[in-house]
Image (cartoon, rainbow, N blue to C red; front, side):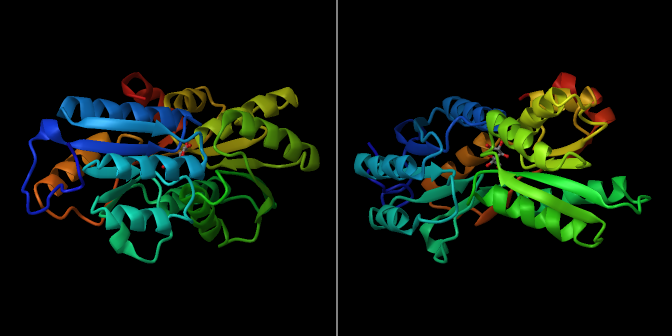
Amino acid sequence: SGGGDAGAAAGPKPTDELVVGFAQVGAESGWRTANTTDIQNSFKDAGIELKFSDAQQKQENQIKAIRSYIQQGVDVIAFSPVVETGWDAVLNEAKAANIPVVLTDRAVDSQDDSLYVSFLGSDFIEEGKKAGQWVVDEYADSTDPVKIIQLEGTTGAAPAIDRAEGFADVIGADDKFEIVASQTGDFTRAGGKQVTEALLKANPDVDLIYAHNDDMGLGAIEAIEAAGLVPGEDIKIVTVDAVKDGMQALADGKINFIVECSPLLGKQLVDIVNQINEGETPEKRIITEETTFTQEQAVEALPDRQY
Ligand code: GZL
């Protein structure tokens, strides 16, 4: 089945004949594994066949997976681009094969937005701004300099670029805030720990760590404790995601604030696939609902967290 004719003149296919190819980034973080689980469960519940690949955070593996889905003639291709650049060639191959493409979670920098039907995911700049606003509010009464270490996500990834931009926009309003060091931890716990160990040695008087995801924040906690300091007190921590392990650390007072980034995109992706099959045009940009959590709110929310 397949053949890239979803929504074409052939008319809608029965759901149980639809085949979707999904090229996932990897399994680098709690967020990513929750995202994978939700997408796989959503397609199983919908009775739609999902071919799935894990690229171990390598763009060439994602491109290979997309090419294999084109060869197999799937009806729709969906993927979360590990980095923003370098997709036009393979997306033009999907277009030539008349296979619609949906971007989930992360964006591409292609100028030609005919290369994908929809983007479904978060507004990462907004997430960075929410993190920055908490920092501005937290230090509103301080006149001393506030020294910040930033743990960046994967270099070139939309969430890393945009979360840094949104954060800088907001704290840039007051020059008491200074990002004394900024380095990628590649969205992993190990990366967050290694980078924090190194940057703490060079910046022992840092006030706060802004990590682009919980996993790097959890790694930073290990490094801070290994240095004999108290995370959440001696050095405050602000992260993004709100996965269970991050929310537990927040409830335990080791993280001070978390900006939520929802990984639960599966249901909306199924809806987009069904719209394409029905010959409808899904919205070009579908932004997920998400909130923020203080330590008190984490204690309340933890029992009901799905991921
Ligand atoms: C954000 C997603 C990021 C998460 C990280 O939508 O791309 O990648 O914030 C994950 O935890 O690794």
